[in-house]
Amino acid sequence: MEKNLGEPIRYDPNFNGPIHNRSCTDVFWIILFLIFLGGWMYIGYYGYQNGNIEKLLAPMDSNGKRCGVDSGVINRKYLLFFNLANCLRPETPITGCPTPQVCVEECPQRTVKFIEQLTSANFNEMKREMVCIDGVNTETMTYSDALQYMNEDKCAGLILQSQSASYLCYGNYVYYRDNPIQLHQTTNLKGYAQSIFSKASTWMVILIVTAFLSFILLVMVVFLRNRIRIAIALIREGSRALSAVKSTVLLPIFPWIFQCAVIAYWLFLFMSLLSIGTPIFKTANLKSDTNCKCAIYTEDNMDCDPNKFTLSSRDLSGGPCRQATCTFQSFETPQIILYLHLANFLGFFWTMFFITGITDMILASTFATWYWTFHKSDLPFFTLTRGAYRTIRYHTGTVAFGSLIIAIVRVIRVILEYIDHKLKKFENPFTRFIMCCCKCLFWCLESFLKFINKNAFIMCAVHGHNFCKSARDAFSLLLRNVVRVVVLDKVTDFIFFVSKLLISIGIGFAVYYILEWNFTYEITKGQRLNYNYVPAIILSVATYIICTVFFNVYSMAVDTLFLCFLEDCERNDGSPEKPYFMSKNLMKILGKRNKQL
Image (cartoon, rainbow, N blue to C red):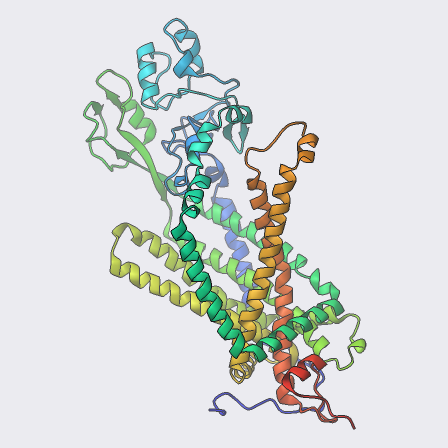
């Protein structure tokens, strides 16, 4: 069994931290990565030349016409919602906003309640301001027609004084402030939550689950207390390392900027490729609308042209068909675009993981140098800079190889999600079960490969070996100390998660109570937010994301020091010739000490 786990690391009198005399590793993969980046840039050029992002950015009305782009609505570039409050329902992101949407030349300049103010006496004057769907001729419309169209949601019964934002007409805040009932009806989550937590059975379930988890936690603490002490000691060592090289805290800012640029480029290319194609429209409700007579289209689900449908379809009274429509279905794109999308996703994930890998290896080199410096006062001043130089000069190929492996698995997961989305309409339990198993399998595989990657990068930063040897050495070292690995991983994950949670929740409560404070009320001259918890939640989420970025540095410090600690235990024995590099606190926990001459 010991042989299967590899030979323990032997003492080397010349080893005192990250190797200085090293050579380039995995050169083929960095060359392949650069070639792929060139191809990815060319795909971006192709998307820019052949795509039209305005097609996607342009809002789309209920008939699938893009305002300001498609024929018939070229001069109408703004989208107006009949009743924007209906869009605040929980199912809207899935089913879409249920209120009719039409393209208009400009947003309404004043608020008009047609359903209340419209009379036969003022009809000719007010109908000029009415907003109706395509096919309704307001010039020939009668007063009775207008009432019927408003009841059928073919004309808006209310228009609000609106302002445009991203070519969408949004009703002014004043109306919703004075008419909050519509918002309360669609966002009554608070009342639902109160009804759940007011039941005694809810608290009984919470008590039982909490007691069970507490018992499990107590048993784990009792039986693994010594290893937990090692984990806590390593976290303290990580704090010392961060304090010694404070510049590591600022390092995540630079990869974050690069990753934002990659996200922007990927999104631009994704939308450009998505806009390459022609819109497909299908007829609907022709059979059920018995009063509709269409000269061109006779069956449901036929390809149709919205303009021709409007001109050729009329009901018995000569007006537009009330139920039959020519509805937008999807974009028809060339087959090659699908492969370009896959290449775009691969480029996105590969580049993002590459940037993360470079950052991790720089940090690993820095913290390993700190650990293997026997007298911490002798730590070089430019430790982080030297780590960055070694990583970029020698090991970008290793990072490219490791990040490619994870990127391929992530692309496979994206493909599985796409297939699962397509299969949902068939409702086959066996197929859904197989897809669920596949997604779970590849999620586990990605998590495992990320774990291997991180530790391989640490070993590469220390010893300068290629990816395969570094991964093998790291995995063997961890397997020889598997219980310590599991305990350290879970303890650090728990502590970091609780820390991030407490900070973000604390910020959220602080923001909420500041907004509730009378002093804030005086500063804003009597103006208050309707929902103070909204900015509090937004800032809490933003705080959690920022904390995650900087806690990743802390996590990398602990992981690096842990591998160095395991190697220290195998390489040295505390004798004057082979002293331990670990702190006195760690030696005390392990019952070890450095012997004096």
